[in-house]
Length: 211
Ligand SMILES: C[S@@+](CC[C@H](N)C(=O)[O-])C[C@H]1O[C@@H](n2cnc3c(N)ncnc32)[C@H](O)[C@@H]1O
Image (cartoon, rainbow, N blue to C red; front, top):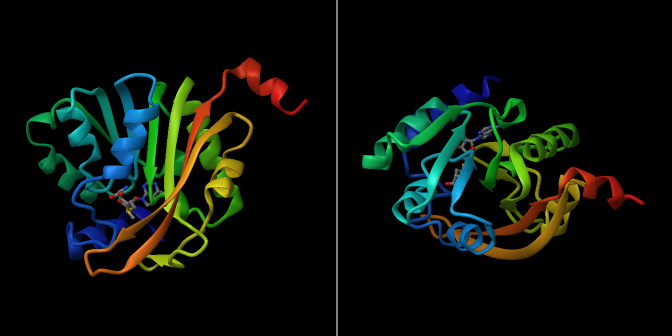
């Protein structure tokens, strides 16, 4: 399956009328605002058409990036960015193949990690996050929890608790916050989410973690 084409078709068919739509990304804004060591350098992976990046820009954040495997999602996002379109970097990439061109302060992922149903892919993902974040940078990761839906957009998902997410990310990170939430889809269906916030350790700290 061509993943980019799959998601292009989802967006062509549904635009922003999608089950994961939220009028405002309240939890993401709260966690990023509360735990980020600075107000610049955020990458939102699997951004879709989320308003997170636009709202951070409105709040004065600088150096913002959105990444998605679907060019169509990023085209829609771009049009929603309005006057911020020229200052936000858009990257088309499968997250599993992302070769970060630099280091970021914040890695944000709402409902993308949960598509990685193979353990090898989750491991690959963790190594991408580790190389994308500067030491002290944070990862905010949210996805369907063990009592959440088994599928999203016709794809199977890996349901995980906050602890599962933390464990999958490995020794390069320290878990600093965990929570659960319920997302209500536009059709009124509740979906259980787990959230984990992690800090990227410095390389010399990682070496001592397993001792
Ligand atoms: C459920 S949506 C969530 C969108 C957004 N994060 C939000 O909260 O509104 C998942 C998004 O991840 C993208 N996606 C799925 N698998 C991906 C992958 N392997 N690499 C990058 N993006 C991916 C899809 O194109 C889609 O936009």
